[in-house]
Amino acid sequence: MSGDGSSAGVRDGALLLAVARGTIAEQFGGPKVQRPEGEAWLEERRAVFVTLKRDGELRGCVGQLAARFTLYEAVREAATSAAFRDSRFFPLRPEELAFLQLEVSVLSPLEPLEVTDEEDLLRKLRPGVDGVVLSHQFRSGLFIPEMWKQLPEKRDFVTLLKRKAGLPPAWVPGTKVERFTAEHWEERA
Image 1 (tube, rainbow, N blue to C red):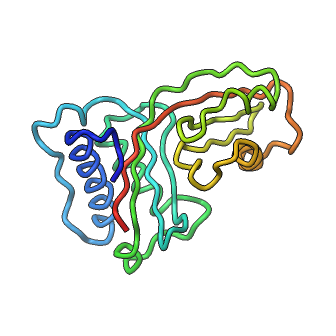
Image 2: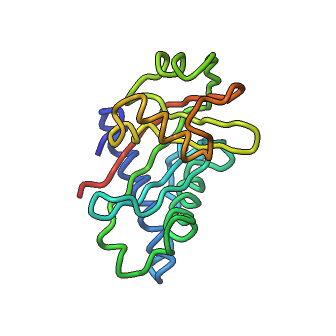
């Protein structure tokens, strides 16, 4: 697992991963996940993404950009949505659960990033650190910071994010850019 490196960070990440996996297992008849007692930090309102991978390939990724739920409820909601409501995939089948690796990302608040054009954005991006939201009118797309592992080149990162957002290849003036960071934990494969 990764996280802030402290023993508390590792323990917290392990707990969030267990909540995510247990929540999905509940849908297949597993025991109900009990809210851990004495963990006040789980009551903080936080934005979360849960990612599911099978054999290193994406199998689902859903979350919230806004901190609408407590951390505990946000992880449960994102895990359920990633498993059963990610429109890019068929709903998870019970036999797949054993083969999944789960990841949980807890996001910082969004921060506006003022840019004049795509070259300015490329100069200001921090690979491996920034998650990015691009939006223009009714279109938007986002990559969490973990996407830098798959797209380490800034230009590739932005090109695919524009495509995900449904934006044209050329930079559209007035495109809004926001960035965020995330604490990230993942199950060992």
